[in-house]
Length: 227
Image (cartoon, rainbow, N blue to C red; front, side):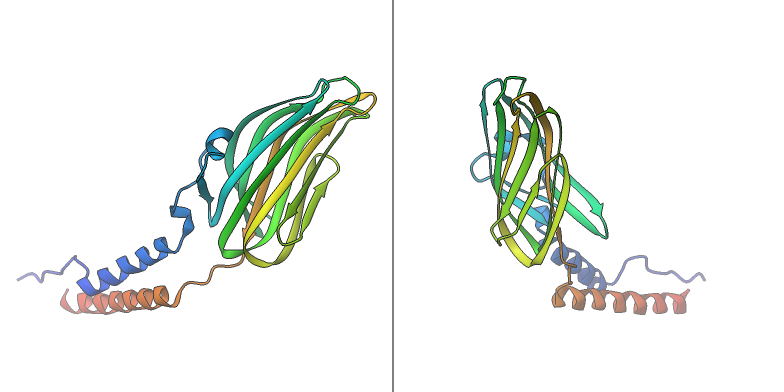
């Protein structure tokens, strides 16, 4: 007579594992609404917020100004994540087309403000933009965080600032292209991203996970005995 082994996990073990998964999802803000590629207008809509990994972006506003032969055309927002050094940065890329033209004294400016929050806390900010200049043209950017940290670039490129862990920040940035007396400047991509401190599992999740693993071990022993 053949011995029959049960292929269904004990209810207590299965329940523990399901609760562990549920608790993990419940504590991750990434499930509140994942950032997708969309227009600047939709990202700037009242009440809009979305997440890139553990980082939440909200209260987004973008404005533009131009003078002389300058012009700015807004495109869309795209989420991004990448490894910078030893940490992963989570952020948004603002795609646009800014050009001063060739008229002396012309400018094209993009201002972007928003709030950012994360769990675990934010520990650095990454800033970059792309562009080109000719002659006396300049392309610069300045970013001020509500914790007093300032990031700036005097030419297209990237920079990072680290700071004490903080749960949320307000961000104000201004990117300006200026033709000068005899030149031009243009830019097209502005990126802002943040990394977070190492996540520590909640005690409740660890307890449930431990219960599930113990149950699986006992089930495995029982199964070997009856085979």
